[in-house]
Structure formats: C-alpha cells, structure tokens
Image 1 (cartoon, rainbow, N blue to C red):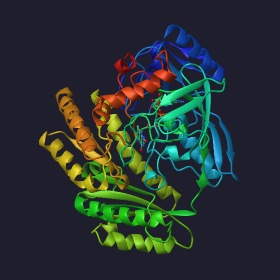
Image 2 (cartoon, rainbow, N blue to C red):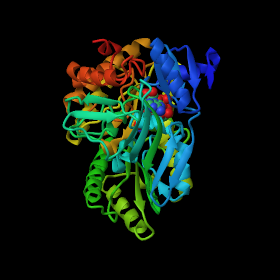
Image 3 (spheres, rainbow, N blue to C red):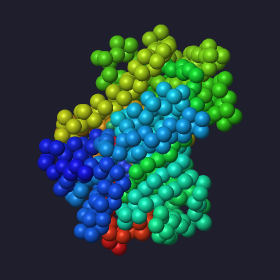
Image 4 (cartoon, helix red, strand yellow):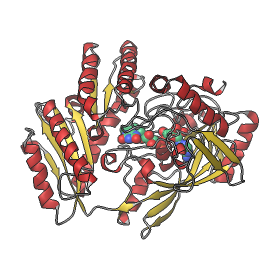
Length: 495
Ligand SMILES: Cc1cc2nc3c(=O)[nH]c(=O)nc-3n(C[C@H](O)[C@H](O)[C@H](O)COP(=O)(O)OP(=O)(O)OC[C@H]3O[C@@H](n4cnc5c(N)ncnc54)[C@H](O)[C@@H]3O)c2cc1C
C-alpha cells in the first residue's frame, strides 16, 4: 500500500472545494479491504484519528483532516458489475460518478443521483446522501442504495441489504460478519419535511442501511455498494428560459412545480412533469455572460427545466412547456431549448460553471465558502428568500444565488471581498440557518454538515439530539478515531 507524507504530495487532501483547510501526518492509499483493516487495527491501538477522503469536492470540510491519517479511496475504483436485466450495479467506493454515469448510460440504463459536480466518488455521494437537479423527480442517493459493505471503525465488517434489517421502534440491532451484535438506540428528533442531509437519518422502524447513508464518514468506511438502476428515458426536452422580472420566474416555477407534483403522483408522463427545475439570479447570469451571448442585460433571472419524453410525447410536451412559459412573460425569443445531446451537455456546463466559479472566487480571496444550503417548506420559500436577500444587500455584501428551486432549495453564496466582510457574511449565514430551521426547513439540504456547519445543526436539533447521535457514534467507534469533528463537535464524544 502506498503511503505519502510529503506536503507537496498530500496537499490536495488538506483542503476541499469550500477551501476548508487542515493537516495530517500521512495519506494512505489502500488497494483492498485488507489494507483498510491494517490501518484501522493500528489506529485503534494508538488512537490515531482517521479521515476518509473521496475526491475532495465536498463543501463542508468533512473530508479535511484535523490531524492523524487520511484514507484515500482513489484506488478502490472498480465497477464490479452492471446487470442490465436486473437493473443494478455493484461498485467499489472510489468509482468516479461521471465514469459510472457514462457506463450506465451506454448500457441504456439510468442512475438518477446527479450532484452538479460529477467528479466525485460514489462512496462519498452515499456518505453525504448527495442529490442534484434530478432529485426534484427522483429524490436523493438514498433511494438508489440497495446494499452496502462497510468496515466499521472497530475493524468489524458489516453487510447491509435494504429490506433485511429493520429497527424495532427506536431499537436497532446490527450484526457484523464475525457475529458481533451492536445495539443502537435511534435518536428521537424528527426530520424536517423538506429535502434534508444534516445529521444521522432516524425514524422508528427504519432500515439499518439508512443510518449509514449520509453519515459523512463518521460511522464506517463504505467499501462496496449495490445500486438500483432505472431505464433510460427515450429522449429529453430541456430549456433555459430568461425572464426580465425575477417574480415572473418564481411564478413560473410555482406553476411548474405544482403541475409536476400532480402529474408525478399519478405517473402521468404526457403532461408537465419536470425532472429538474433550476434557478439562476441576475448575478449568476452576470458571472456567466461573457461565455454565453444569449444572456442580455435585461435578463434578471433564468430557469432551467428538463422533462423526459418519448417519440410520441415529444411534440405534445414541447408545446405544453411553451404554453406554460408564455403565461409568465419569459423572453422566449432569446431562450434556449435543447435539441440534441450536445446542447443538453451545454446546459449542464452552464449550471456547473456557476457553482465552480464561486469556489474559484473564494479560493482566490483566501476565504472559505459562505453559501446557504437551506431548503424550506414551499409555503415559506419565497418570503424566506426575499428576506435573506434583503439582509445581504443591507450589509453591502456581494452575492449570487442559484440552485434547486424545484425543491425550494437555493444556494445564496455571499462573496465577501475581505476578512471584515467575511465575518459579516458568517454572522448572516448563522441567521439564515436559524430562520430556515424555525420555519420547518433545514440548514443543509444536500451538502451535509461536515466541520463547517455543526453549530448550526446543534441549533436546529438541540443538544439532546446531538448527544443521541454521539451515543451511536461511540457504540460503533469506541476508540473515537473515525471522521472526528464531522456533524458534531468532538467534545460530545467525551461525555
Ligand atoms: C461545483 C460543485 C457543485 C456541487 N453540487 C452539488 C450538488 O448539486 N448536490 C450535492 O449533493 N453536492 C454537491 N456538491 C458537493 C459534493 O460534490 C458532494 O458532496 C460529493 O458527494 C462529494 O464527493 P467527493 O468524492 O468529492 O467526497 P469528499 O469531499 O472527498 O468527501 C465527502 C464526505 O464523504 C466521506 N467519505 C468519502 N468516501 C467515503 C467512504 N468510502 N466511506 C465513508 N465515508 C466516505 C468523507 O469522509 C466526507 O465526509 C458540489 C460541489 C461542487 C464543488
């Protein structure tokens, strides 16, 4: 097994896409489970902290080490099987999502989880329960995980198959491959009824596999996953629609979201039934306008929509979308409809560029990302958005806002120019998380908590709930070595 210690060779592991920075003694590159077990055996003996690393595109500091060793999953990168008939795939944890999506698509199948950043590893997308544009219709990664192989921090191997092991009320029993039984008491907090990815999943009578999905590298090392695949849609229609009033864009989305929900519930694919609805504000468009001449000065907002079609429904659905758009004053002449795969790819790049430009901006300023990941119940979404925007403007902080508007989940990224503005942005960020939680929303809909948002999670769920999570962690990680500082502060493990 390769182990690297030179700063120049490991510096990529000491930072993530939010520019959260850390340090470690060495990075290990296991090539199989035996290598991982060897690292864990020593780590348990010497109480060495271990951080698991995917590809470093996380936005919460979760993969950034604060001392100890890093386990890189780079070399665990085999697609073991794609079964076309039974529609599933088995993969190692370090398979790049982009490569996996390409392989699956080439076989006529479809894997819905689709974070905007595709250069991430599948194991990490499971560890963070990633979602993306298509989650509006298809939900988060959790919905596609059938089986997991996990090495627990104590070196025990655990195999979980969805449907095989349910909690009895809030009592969950798991049995490892060696026969060790671990009894877990599930936390009592209630998950918000919005897209949500913060803290351990909990529900009475839940499936054991769901505890590990979204546990952000704290409860075990995922080494292998069996994933559910769907049939690939025959075709897609997609458009980027420009609006000269932001309110028109929001009214359009309200209508499209409502119609999509109604038709999805009865599986009606011959009516408006978007699989994604994404938003770009005026400043996002300004960020992009040099590369996209379609963007005009009077464009104050844009919406990207996508819907699956067949040869029979294509024209019908195209007309339905045009009819809908016409009701909301979109600039149809300059809007942009995809007619082939090259155009569809351009739309994806359009969306990706805006997020990656924010990461570039903050790295250049030497600051950390301060962007909301809050999601709100639909009835509170518009007021919340207008209130937080007002607070940012009142404080003279530049910002851009974009994201998964179908799920009432936008990323308002503040763009502080210096450390003083950064401090103001952090205070505002805390205010926005608190307000989202008060309104029945979440502090994190998809990026997770990591090390950057644990105080906001504490505020959202309260200390009792954090202690319940820490109890689970102690059961599975008696020597407190794995992913320490993710989700909650280390001090809760010492109680
Ligand atoms: C431009 C941009 C856009 C993004 N858009 C989205 C989006 O739309 N939706 C979304 O959900 N996210 C998004 N993200 C965040 C990020 O891409 C996801 O969180 C992704 O899942 C991280 O994958 P990674 O391989 O980079 O993991 P890393 O950042 O390296 O690690 C993430 C976490 O996973 C844990 N982990 C990694 N491998 C394992 C394993 N084998 N077992 C247990 N734990 C493990 C790590 O310890 C860490 O806690 C975006 C990021 C960027 C930069």
